[in-house]
Image 1 (cartoon, helix red, strand yellow):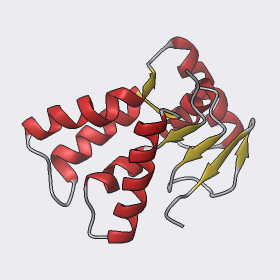
Image 2 (cartoon, helix red, strand yellow):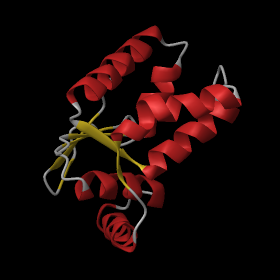
Image 3 (cartoon, rainbow, N blue to C red):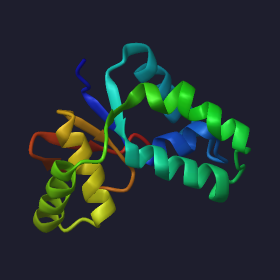
Length: 140
């Protein structure tokens, strides 16, 4: 099963709720569409970051029970990239070449490893191309 799109953590943070109604609506459309079409994916890192923010830092934090349900229903069906030696090596290569932070490089490496053509992220430069991967900020 291929995935054309990779979602960074911010997509899910806005999906969970935001004071920015427009960003929440966009995230809702992206996540719903991805779950229906099964054409998008995430890495283990996105799950970890999402749960960390959602249970500790979000405007409205999730209870532990809600934090157990959200991954089961939303995140796990999209999980395609797990931690591996090859992923870390690729992230280090991305970091060296593009001078991103290590964690941003790990997101890019995950998208590249999944064979995605689009990475949705508001943290990286909209329109930037990396090895056939185009970064898009859906909130722009």
